[in-house]
Length: 326
Image (tube, rainbow, N blue to C red; front, side, top):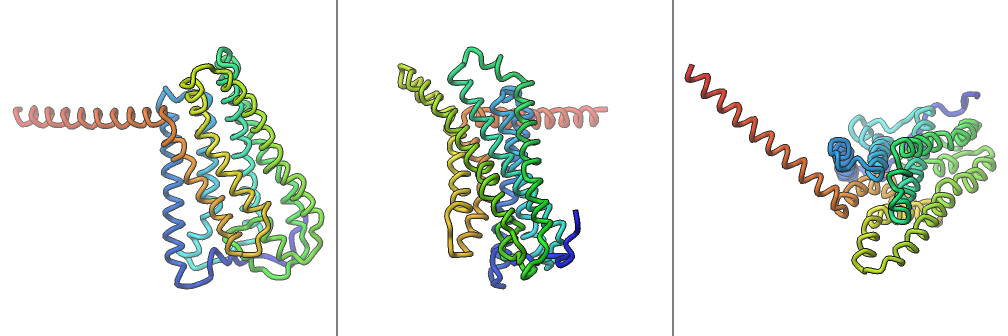
């Protein structure tokens, strides 16, 4: 692979180039980033520490939290660093790495959602064989497939992006290195890259995951409709509500970001920001607020922390009294 001789670094314009808006944007992005880290880390720790959540559904949810934390860091770090250091440049290699990680993590998230939809299908359509089918080895294999396939899918994109021979400018009118703004400033032929984006990218990002998730939920809905009691149907649907909410939210942002043409650059950046920052922040809260098991586990951990703190206070107090008596 040959190095690009005409471009050594890019200038990232950011969300806005208005000086008065830089501080509010920094504060907003920092809050979103911290909420995303805290929310996903809390959910990840809760799944790891609480034995009641050691089930396939929460195993995949823990993987989703890891993806969201990595995605938020990859996509938002440049906005925060630019405000702190004043340096809005990024090397050519760093730009390629950021694009590759962003695309791969987005693919990982979609594949993990497919695995979660399959888990819900087995739980509702084949409940008697659920623990036999969704054993630890199968769950681990599915997670590994999601991670490996996500990170190998976009290797070809990096090759063709890196092979772009010239650029009309080194200014990327975006807040991160994404494929579309990179192709917009390329002055060499990008036909192969556009074809890959419209075929392989579309298939991976949209069509294949959508069809697989749709197939799972068609079987799920058919099984739910066979349940005679309305309470049973409502309970079965409730177990899928959080997963469905995340899917609708993610696919809506992908459609607006990539599939619906927009003449406004501001709206493109807004859709990208929502996809790259807001969705990873909302995911843990959606699963926490709409999931009884997570809320019960959270209260259980809080209760244990209170009991442990109370015991420590008593032990310290007794030890202090005993020391004074001596």
